[in-house]
Image 1 (cartoon, rainbow, N blue to C red):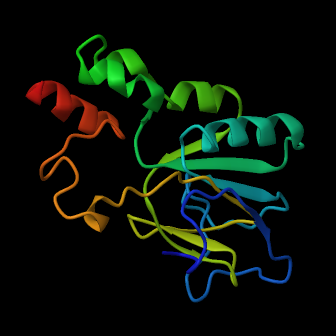
Image 2 (cartoon, rainbow, N blue to C red; image 1 turned 90 degrees about the vertical axis):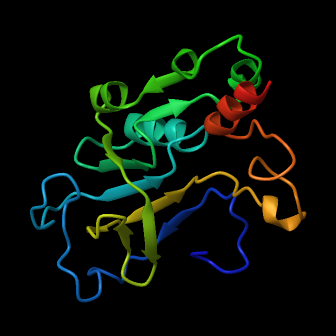
Length: 178
């Protein structure tokens, strides 16, 4: 957990004007790998679901062009979770309820990264990605959605005695068992 005591289903805008570097790491622009030395302001949105995608689009729409908006998500496609029951009973396939994100995001001027964020350092205003890249932000939106906690009830979940449709992968497994 990045922020102990803060619920995972959480959207927040953080700003720390006094911090300008990312610890001992050289600050990078995620996409180009070049040192981030521009006068632009950077907003990073973590989570490419029903909270993060609209947040990124709205920020891009309302902020000046020199303000960079980057969306970071774990998968290249948006998976429409309310359609998972249809996948679980075979009325739709995962392809029917998924949308590739790169073109719609980039066409609106939102930078898109398919990665997991492994660390957030609010003191230095940096996020670390699963490939080790470290990037700076001026503003941070955390829209990662819920964390499933099947382990809280012994035997619960798709790896034990129940099925789930909480993720597209779970819905596919439920359909296979249907």
